[in-house]
Length: 244
Length: 244
DNA sequence: TGCATAAGCTTGTCTATACAAGTATAGTTC
DNA sequence: GAACTATACTTGTATAGACAAGCTTATGCA
Image 1: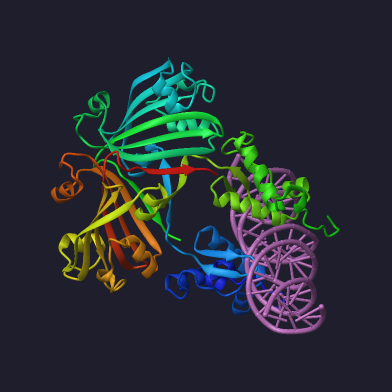
Image 2: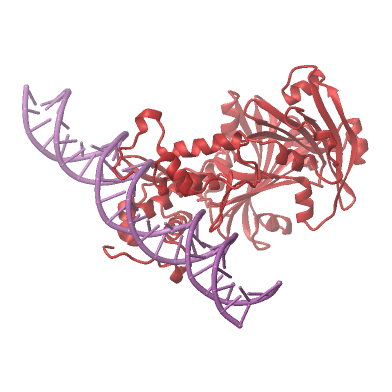
């Protein structure tokens, strides 16, 4: 290691820090270190792989970010307790999602106006009662089948030109993400029943189960938008993968 | 910068790479660089902050991992398009979840036996038809109210003593995470209707909407367990936050 | 025995330097 | 004008050395 060694990527196609990472991942997956077990120190891995400590450090640091190991200064690196499966869930723009499946998306606009926030709307969006808000109600179709009823309130301060957008061409999600810098999003997913109006728009009975996603985005303390997304059961599901 | 400078943590309480990170995050949140905008190069930040390039590089690399910036070799660093809101969703053990709310959890076991995998079960778990599998059916209650019906298949190779566990004391999820190293989890969330048996166990009608989570975990190519978790609508929701 | 101290391990971070590799552009040649 | 080339700039990564900070254990003193 005293001689400067050229990065030996050609042999494995992987950068050294990736090789160390993959090795540790493989050993963890093989059960070599059960959760809580002390794993090799950086120094040990340095001699084992013949790389510098910074390289090993990067590998271990990234594994820590991924939640695969716990590191304690002065003590060592431990295989993580995997009692929580943390998954990266991606909420996508529905247009993108439908197009990615190779299908055709279109939308119908049933409401797009300015309102004085009712108690209900004010609470949903997180603004004062009576504040000026934009309100849209749009139904999204996949290959002609109603997939989502989108009932949305928007804070005019964050998107003053919102009502000027042609929502049959650009989805509110897409437009808002372009216009308003978003730095926080809360969402909840639950099963429930559609309102009478939603049922009518989606061609359902009010007793048909739906998957309902509520999403509120804000930039710090300033609320941007709140959406209630109603999907007929069976036509929509959220999927996720956890893969270290 | 020619003189070796002692890490000036005391002044801000933050490591230099964290300071750079926080600065960039704040500017991004303030809309300084709208999505797609070219951000300062590493060299520029080096002179601006008076730190080494490796320090700036770490800050930018971590921002990239967090999805806040896109980096292209040979071109530069760009403010990320936030058209995808990627959220860290944590799937927790239901016992933990109920206890964390300060409530009381108990469970009733309605089935716990070995079976030859039916076509249906084999497909769900991902094993060959007729394979020996464990099958449990457990209802979880929060303060006496039925919250979840857990219909689960387990690969005996991964947890040979599974049927010996007292599931009124330890949940299958908890036991399996202890016993079998898990390195992959797929899940889907949808609204739907309970089966006749599930409806009976949960005290519902078969027309009452439910939130249904299907989760399959494996260790590489070896399937560990598959669970169908049925929750009465309104009694359960999945929540998530996205916060850079 | 009890306690303080020092040594020796661990991880956490920063630096200066080096080279590899990808991209854009200005300039040159045909 | 079109195609090639050299250059300059970008990010990607590796390295050796240094020091900080936290934990454990052995050591010496009272």
